[in-house]
Length: 468
View 1 (spheres, rainbow, N blue to C red):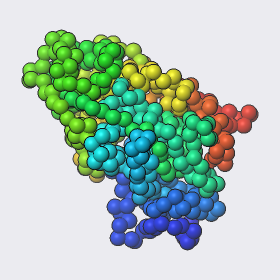
View 2 (tube, helix red, strand yellow; view 1 turned 90 degrees about the horizontal axis):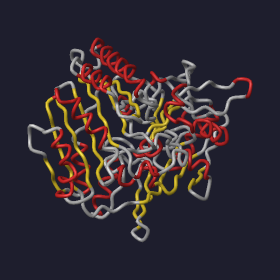
View 3 (cartoon, rainbow, N blue to C red; view 1 turned 180 degrees about the horizontal axis):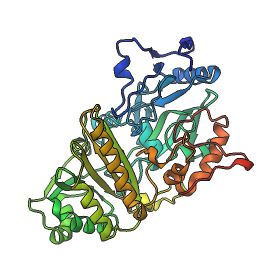
View 4 (cartoon, rainbow, N blue to C red; view 1 turned 180 degrees about the vertical axis):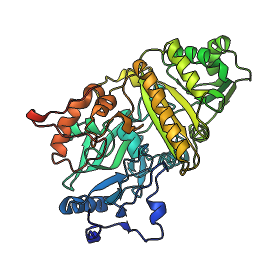
């Protein structure tokens, strides 16, 4: 692989090895991986993105596209080649006449929260970790603490601007480039082009309350059993909740309710009666912005190594699965922190047909995210143990779950280099064929490819085999 590419075709801020900021600029959130790209270009505007695409296409330079640096398997990084970074595309305006926002794809969730928080009027159904980029969230689907009330984040996307494989700028929405608009809402980031801006339908939340509950770890089977049967099926879709079980012995649940604290308390009474907590429940009125601050506080804000995977649950987990989870969590490897996190679905998310957007897992009851973290990237034993723990628990739960969330990227599900394309069915379900057709239309030469990208339709004589 040549190392002497001519980068004069790039515009924007170009960072090369030897630049003072190179080491920090090439570092992503998951420090399990270290990559050494030949260059990074921080695009300052759409024209810089166009020039970068034309550059790599004309010169055959391998590349990856990056926004929030939170790809779980760091699919937005590579050794050698070019990293096209869009995190500087942060222009944002709000139109109060239509309750919409036009935002650059480089915004982080925190920046989006700040933008809307300043208005004291608007909200938007994003996720819960501030450093994550909205481009990845929105292209993958977007789950968060008001999902049951307003649906996925993609359900509030009105229009998407994208730079194509030829370097052109197109707009995709309900009336223009409708096939691309369908694919970009749930089809994963970086498959069809480089998204540079979104138009979003904002929502209003007049009242909001949060709750917090905790139990001893030994109570997991009963707490989880009640939660999984009731949280996703509540007729009152104003409540979205999460449940977390960790190897430090903590078992806790939190939720957001779009109403009065008194109503929320009444809604939780059956659970409290069935699974009495040893400590009083916390119920508090908050603004939507302060609720984002609260839930962001649960995430480790420091760069660290980890191995994570995910799965969707369509039917309540049986007692055998709950026992397996409890055994795994309570026997975590030394120097490894392990946990399993769940969020309730249903409500507005399930109102949308699974074929209406590229996100296919609309009818799941809830989502699982499980994994292990360790503190020292050089602690090879801890890292290997965390990876093995995650793989083992996912394998154990495989018969009880379906698919996986593309924003919880996991190379154990398959990759281009291994020739195992099972990840396509896991991420996109019955929508794979349509996604591949749209890929063939918008990127027939497969310029935008990475280890878990969507390939164009294969020739008739050499079709890919994809299993769900």
